[in-house]
Length: 309
Image (cartoon, helix red, strand yellow):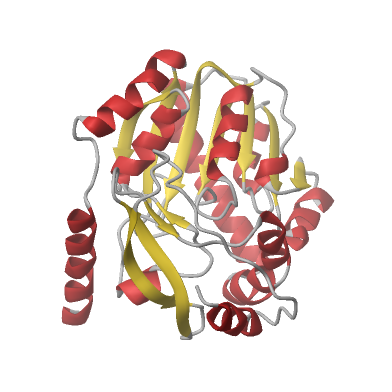
């Protein structure tokens, strides 16, 4: 992006200091070659501007490129995202109710895969109420989120949550039976660092649950937005899991945690370690990938059906 384009975006965020952006490699396969999908995307509140989204030429991973540094995103999530995106859309009481219900449904679904009592980590936990059904069953739980107001509320009501960025987690090795990242991996600064820390924390055969936005529910210009730095489709969710040793056993768009987040998708994996990690690059080479044209035509399809509604 040109400096004048960066400055325009920073002015929209009410950030006075000039911030630098840098090009990123694909976070799944490490490829440097990308192709532009959209240059202008949603900046929220029906405001659209330049913040390019690219597609990896090797595996089809979709992500914002270029991006700012870690400190910028910490300031962003502490400021504009919390005040103008979260707080304007969701009341505290409604968020609590929704998180509790989602947690109950998730526990019900996972019941056959988990021990009766175990240890859980919720990455990007908001107030932490998704952990409540697990806590009520006697599980040891901990969560983290960079949004201070929600974390303070959760802590005030006895929930085990910390206000940190996911990259700064300090989790005991081989200590977790279950890790959930419910729509948060799209927001973090360094997805690979987060996944690496989760891998260190998980026990053998432990479960990882990833939730992502899924397919667009409307025009692409709204689907791509400033708050989501990467976009997982089913294939790339599975590849990210495999890269860090989880073997996916279910990828679905079925609303496992209820109807409160329409259009999301889930990927469930069991940790198997190095055997799975060694396979993932070969899988990409042998066809477990999406091409630029695959993505382009998918986006054109959703643009078309959104116009016909």
